[in-house]
Structure formats: structure tokens, C-alpha cells
Length: 358
Image (cartoon, rainbow, N blue to C red):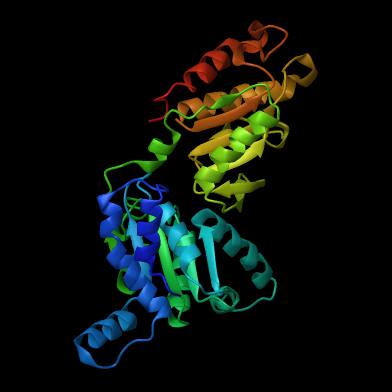
């Protein structure tokens, strides 16, 4: 590798790929430290050798936390793409949790006494570097499993880079029986370089502000417009999103950095209700919805769900990008009075405004 992460960042800055941000620039030292842990042999002589040897011995990675939209995910993606090793994975934390539970189902069928060692062996196989975006703990069982798994992975030499909106000590704050996972939170604090990322710029808002959000008709030009937005928000990374709710699973194939991309029939064609849409909204920040058709008595159930979806997105301030057969006023072709479509029309128009969702 001839270029450092600092070189890559400054080249992107010079090319206009990113806007200047002092907080991002200040983080380059920590990213270079992570780069050294992953790639560079540790010198055994001299003061700097001793410092790097100590850092390599004590740090298993980087925990980057701060407010939403500051560029944490962008920097993670930049760093991940930059590191020239094959034994690496980059996952959204929700995808990580889903994979853990999927694998535990198989392991438990083997009736092993402790599921964590075989789980750790599976994840550690051919894995030197793990990136987890938007780390969070929502319940004690997941907290215990993740804590034990990461502790085992650290012992096997896996390096972790994770982002979060909260510092480790604030994870699952005031949650029921939080004391049961405090030792696992300490696993993060004792193994990772915990860095607060205090960027003042909200880059997600900057990227979305002023963007066209409602495309009609749903033709090739609309598809290209949504594709450009998806590429900008996802950075080319896509994962599966599985939401488990009341014993059911809602599956989506395109999810990245809090952005869900799906089609009208994939979402509104399912027998979903308000609680389901709320569960989806709780797991995303942006929805890209493609190919909303003209709505009528012929697709009444789907149209009803679309209204529920719009209400849920509106009430939870989720940014919506959509392609549709017509503008909101002409989308329901048999008259909006039939099932309160007027409210959906009003909200769709409001959600197109420049500052909505900020």
C-alpha cells in the first residue's frame, strides 16, 4: 500500500468528493493508528516503537461515536475500502445481530453447552478486520451475546471499527436490568480506542437538502434519479435487512447506512399494518420507494397500506424519496375522499419541501 488513509482523505477533499470538515481532519490521527494496527509491523526499538507496541498490545480497534449525520459511516466506508486485506467484513449492526441469531438457531440444534465458542469460531474464520456501523444495544440478551462474542473475537486477534450515536457508557442507558451487561460494555471500553466525533456539520442533511424527492411519472428518468440518490447515501454498500416483529420476519434486500430501498409491491403488497410500519420506521432513517402505481378500488388494500406508510413516515420524520405514476393529487384516480387520501396528499407534498425532516 503506497497511500495512507490521510493521503486518500486529502485526495478526496481536493477532488471535491467531500467538503472540508475540521472534525474529520482531526480524526485522521486515530484512523492512521488503526491503519498501523492492521497493516504495519510494530517496531521493537526506540520510543515510537515502544508507543506503537503498547498501542498494538492494548487496542483492538476504534469505537467512533457522535451525533447522526456527521460523516461517521462515510469515514468507515472510506477506511474499509482503503485497507488492502481480504479478511474483512463491513456490516450494519442490525445485520450483524440478524446474522448472529440466524447462526445461533443452527448451533443450538447441536445441543452444545455454550453457544458462544462455536459462534466465535464461525465469525473469526478468515476474519481479521470487522466494521460494524451504528452500534447499539436494545436489550439485555443481545447485549450479553454481543459482548461475549466480541470478547472472544478480540482474543482471536480480530480488529474492530465500529460507529455509534452513543458512547459505550451510554449504551442501553436506563434500560431494564442494564447491570447485567455492564461488564460487556466494559469489554468495548477496555479493548477499543473510544473517540468522540464532534463534527458540527450534518453531512446527511447537507446531502439530502434540496434534493428532488418525488419523481413522476415512474419512468427510466425517475429510476435513474433514485439510483443516484441510493448510490450517494449507500456508497455502493448494500446489505439485507430483516426486522423481527411479533414472531414474524419482514425481509428487504437493499439496506445501507440507515437507508432502505424497496418497491411499492414489496412493501405495500405485504399484509402489514401500522405496528409493522412503525417497526420498519424505527430501523431506518431514509426510505427510497420505487414504482408507486395509480391507486384505485382495484388495489384498495395496497392503497390503504400506502396511506398507513405515509402517515408513519411523516410522524417519525423519516425522509422519503419516491417514484410514482403521477403527482400526489392525481395518484388516487377514483377520488381521495374514499379513504382519507387527502391527508396523504398533503403529507406527501409537505415531505417534498426543502427543509422537511431536518
